[in-house]
Amino acid sequence: MQALAVAGVAVAVAIVSAAGVVGFHVWDAAATIGNNAVEIGNEGDPALPPGLGEIEGGVNLLLAGTDSCEGQDLRMFPRCGIDDDGGERNDVTMLVHISDEPRRVTVVSFPRDTYVPIAECQNADGNTVGGGTEKINASYMYGGLGCTVRTVEELTGEDIQFAAAIRWTGVINLSDAVGGVDVCLQGDISDRHTGLALSAGTHTLQGIEALQFLRIRHGIGDGTDLGRISNQQQFMSSLVRKLQGDAVFGDAGKLLNFANVAMTQLRDKQLVLDKQLANPTRMVQIAMALKDVPFEDILFVQYPTAYEGDGLVPISDAADALFAALRENRPLQLTGEASGGFGVEVTGEAPGATTSEPTPGATEGGEAPPSDTAVELPSSIPGQTANQVTCTVPQK
Image (cartoon, rainbow, N blue to C red; front, side, top):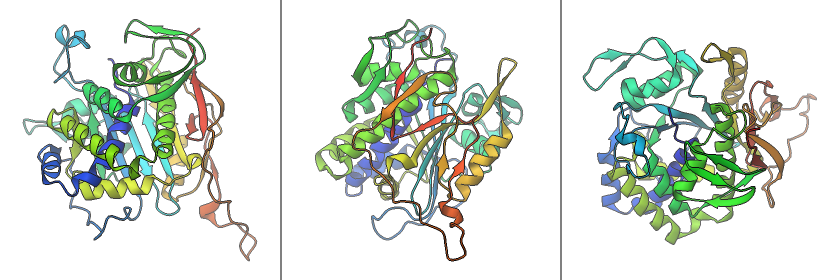
């Protein structure tokens, strides 16, 4: 099943967060968000701080990219007029962990073909569904965004407070609003499945080309979803550097443009928010927690898996080490490759990259504070930091 890219979802959330700055004062924007919000099953509504300062404490935000044909242009997505089965799968699933002070961001991508226990969920008819072991991208089909949230919570042991999902046309329109993202290719690529053909070198992508790049897996790396994930992470890293470099959150004109585009995607059901996130004030607070995080403290990693049969299975020990370090708010050090599917290679560091404060020295007892001691992640966890420049590797 063709996938939506993880980066497209992140574009949406970044833009909607920015849109909240304007929407805080515009009733129509707030009403649009609320009217299109969905329930994901979390109990209670986290209290909002009295002002527009950054959100307090740590945050777990689930982002899904789905393959729904609803509202799609058949000229761009002809398969929607041929073999649409009416289902909607989370072909992209990403958990964004924002730590408490000191702020760090870790984005965990879950390969769509990973066999996991699907949570028991309520479908649209009120029937209990799920409960078996299937590929993770089946969870949205069973019970929407809430079912995907519960499935990831049970898999990781993490409590997820907020969630959002985006469809193909939403990615196209929101990437246009960003104004393009730079990507690097080590050689020419051509993919008949997405229709994307690009020459070696650096390209600034937006609109349909951005979506094609984020969906591509044939013609890059080993041709699998694992290579596609790292390709998406290249896009994500470049997007982070662009948003910080362009000082997006301080430009009222850009925020207003983003607000208008984001509200349109919500009204057209190309963007879905959960009821906990559907508050302009809260979105601003989350955005403010992200804006000053140093590039080397923003990590994009792939949930650790191994091939088994026609899919993937979790490497539980490695996953446990990752999430234990996140709960302890420890710095993370990558030891594995940049890509689990040979999709990208690291070519250097970002020019003008931000840097964090040095790790404090030993305490009077002679030991460094545990929160400042880096955890070396198992080599079975591929990934990159926003400080690293990577380039897509054509399939050989």
